[in-house]
Image 1: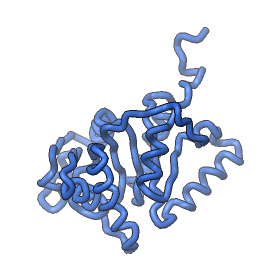
Image 2: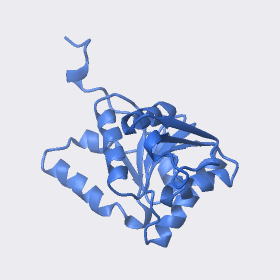
Image 3: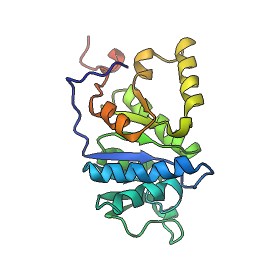
Length: 203
């Protein structure tokens, strides 16, 4: 999507979706910490899943080490000493995963997916679907660390070519290889109009 630099989003807080495991790629692992550091130094609060483990823990630590704000949102069944980060600015406990996602949405001005597994993809595609349906107008970014998401992006391009995904909906996905470029794209993202079939005021 062509960036409209006349449009400006106020990104005070960003939800980050990513893995709760370390993985085996040191570039991806280090980049997660750098994301947290960048958010803190640019006065953008972190909203994330509340874990101290894996890439999630790296992002949070990057924020906290640089005097930023980190809010964790975790369902009660995951709130154990082995999982939860106890040094966060704020920790919010929900009853279940669905409430967790709703709370993260409510607290955030934008969303970023770092590398992750099934859970990360589920969170990414749900928030994309909400944006496609006009349920929110926040920017959604994919941080393509060390080209991790190349195949996923190619699959989405294939969906467009096969006529199963509208190009305008594909344009909801902002992609960059580094956090600086991604946040710049997110700041200037212009939301698509609500689908006509969902407009109750349309006759």
